View (tube, rainbow, N blue to C red):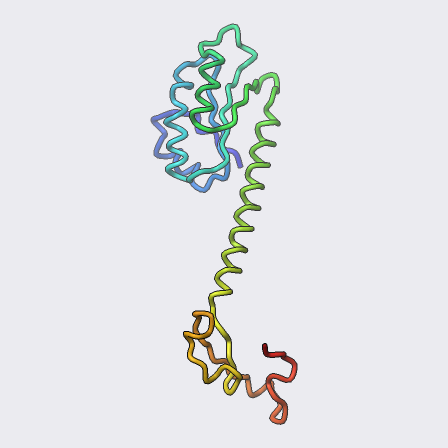
Length: 177
């Protein structure tokens, strides 16, 4: 879904609801509208406050009207650098660089997802190493103090009597280190 908040301050309370949960952001200013350019830092801050650090780009729209421009190229580039976002010059009317903006954001979002997945997996792996030693009643570690077992707790597990045969050891298919 794409939401165009149009930068209208009178709708600020409503627009926050639109970008809550957003996964990417396009900050757009018009080549012919200095006020839209000046409002960009405040809009970026509103997005960061509401949804955190998400993939974001700065877009100078209406480059087909460069003859009427009221923003210098250097100013736009400096703003992008200051905000630490990628900068695109585009024309929606002429369909210039529009696809590139969304391709870039999609790539950045997928990279972020992959990174989060890897971090979540690492956290799961690290936390699983801290669980401790699982021990069945009467197992080889049952008489050891838990502080000697890798700093973890000993969790005693008892076999489900309905699923184990009386004459079979619960360890018959396991090798205990």
